[in-house]
Length: 202
Image (cartoon, rainbow, N blue to C red; front, side, top):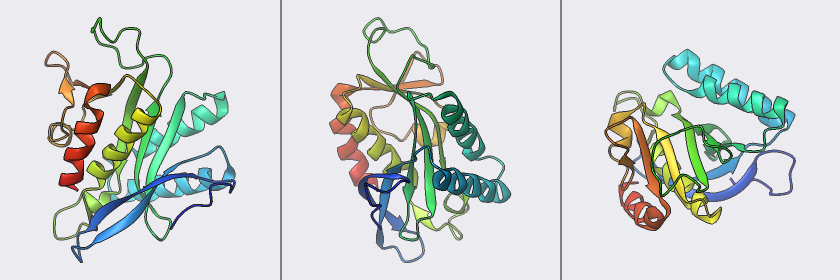
């Protein structure tokens, strides 16, 4: 399903592939940006409510609250992206900051550079459950690949995040920890190498 780019709702950016855990076949999903509109607000609210009932450990609520705050405050540095399946169901959400740094660390090479910060990343709990029940494989890797590609297109100098899920981010290629802290960075010169390796993981 491709979103009409002139519709007054989520903005289609690109498509990616993930593996259906039940059929073991690849399925196409849309990488989209959510807009300031009633349709997207309702869709996000319903999605995170459903996720919370499945697992209180997702970051869906934080992402939705970030979306509402950004809309209320006209914060154009915050962006909200997702992967949606052929039914229009959101399978992954991410909150991105491209303004003043919120994830701070000491690196003289990057102090005055343009950041692309992954504040939160959350997948549908149905696909983070035990292997017998999950719906999709590789959702997180597919989302990271699209975000890295987008950061490159936007000419951002580096991607930064606070690693709250070591087992996941430790597997993401070229994301390096900052002096043994939970923070990780990916520099722009490694974007293409990262996406090529992620293609092999999906």
